[in-house]
Length: 108
Ligand code: 2BA
Image 1 (cartoon, rainbow, N blue to C red):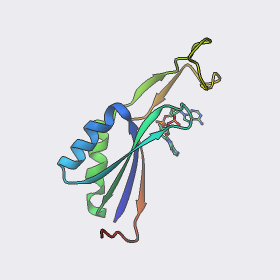
Image 2 (image 1 turned 45 degrees about the vertical axis):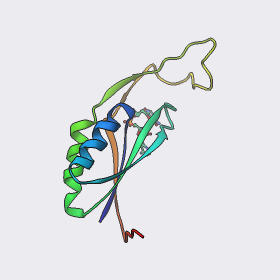
Image 3 (image 1 turned 180 degrees about the vertical axis):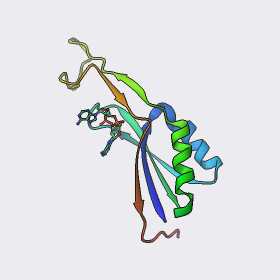
């Protein structure tokens, strides 16, 4: 069994998790924050059989798109704790995915 841990853009997360559940996968959504941009993203946890892993990855590939993130910083009110040394624009991937081996899974 595998645990797929997929960090996806908030804008893609609803469509991607719906497509995964429609295909029969069990999905947990966590609200997370990227450590570099300090912008919210979504981490999907998907526990699945080894042979279904590729199908889940294909669904993520289909629904998670690469996009440019413009670092909107102003020198005045509202800048908060933003890091002003960040580049103006970064390309954020469609999904950052880790596939982990699972020793055991139980539901009680
Ligand atoms: P963030 O950490 O906010 O990173 C957003 C984007 O900023 C990254 O897109 C990448 O283009 C750039 N970036 C991140 N760290 C950088 C660094 N140290 N130097 C230069 N540029 C950097 P992605 O690579 O597509 O990552 C999107 C989000 O996925 C990340 O948001 C983070 O939440 C997560 N992530 C990516 N790689 C990870 C990893 N190896 N471990 C844990 N989380 C990761």
